Image 1 (cartoon, one colour):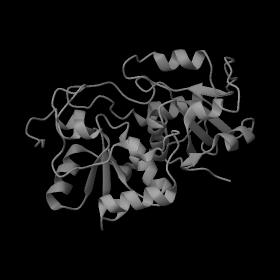
Image 2 (cartoon, helix red, strand yellow):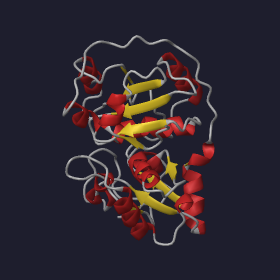
Image 3 (cartoon, rainbow, N blue to C red):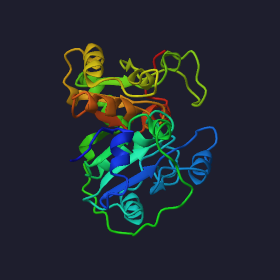
Image 4 (cartoon, rainbow, N blue to C red):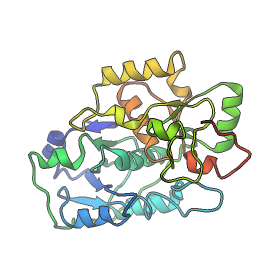
Length: 279
């Protein structure tokens, strides 16, 4: 069986030693960028590799990009191969933040044409409720990952501008409401949101236990938000293009297929002072 959205801790445990399964730890902290690697070394799901958001899942910041530009797909493909991921592997990604950072790698793999990737529902916290972690580093046999790039999965800033002007997309901001409204801005130099964007904080996708809401509930909530817009015309953004993947994942899990990512997101949008800002 193939898993392409979410997977439970129980199912992962049952397949933890499957030769075709690869597990990747994506824990990260924006406040302390080395904290995720520290946590990995002090206890991770057996056989998991580690992926660093800045070093592995993003490229270098420039004067024109947001805070987490998409990685060079060729470089990422080489890293995937070095982690033992080939085109036939089932990949499971996890973090300790509700799937925020794992969702980034989930989306990146889909961008590279790999559909067999799922986020661990509830993250390492739900794994640890029943199963052990280890400090033993995995024995990784490098392989080759061949990317089949699908650039239809994301938009750049100009495409977002044009689509908004033509009213052909529904844009959803995944940040907290107070950041969306421009009342606070703890990270970026400009507060507010992209004009015409709607707001759905990614935290709304999770229940009190840190698990994703049911597909039925997510379907109803997103449908209420996007109204009659086809899911293929929904575009997600956030501060830097990372947490937006969480809303995209939630829609896929809910059966609302084909929404897109504005990869540069708010931190890229505000680089150009000619782009409008709403508060």
